[in-house]
Length: 195
Image (cartoon, rainbow, N blue to C red):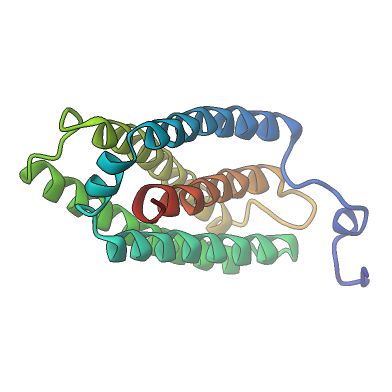
């Protein structure tokens, strides 16, 4: 139920962002879906290799990365709520917190990559690690781009360039970040947990 304090487009069921961003996100999710399908089919064909290889990954690290990205997504959503209420400077604070949380993911992922390479578990080690590097590397690049976008949005919020009437570009950036979160929520159990 809508109240008078809520922006009118939310009451009308307005889709955040713009249609072009939704098509872009759909295209990105399609690429991830193909990679996830390749991983799943290959796992069905080589279950023992995938099970043995998965034991070489630290599930606790994967869980910590998941928590950091989900936390960043929460902060981005809180920033969006502030911007919708014409409080962009408060939104900037939440975006900086989102970037801090996302930085934990980056540090953990780089540390994991370095450990795997030092252990000889590079892309050529076996099929599991080939797909692991492709999937997580592609996602990692999306995280870096998402962090750049969040930083850019935070600076624009700090300068007061968004408000309740002018926040479409802001919502597009936050949508991109939520797509990055969503993909990792699927990748974590697929790569680190499920046999």
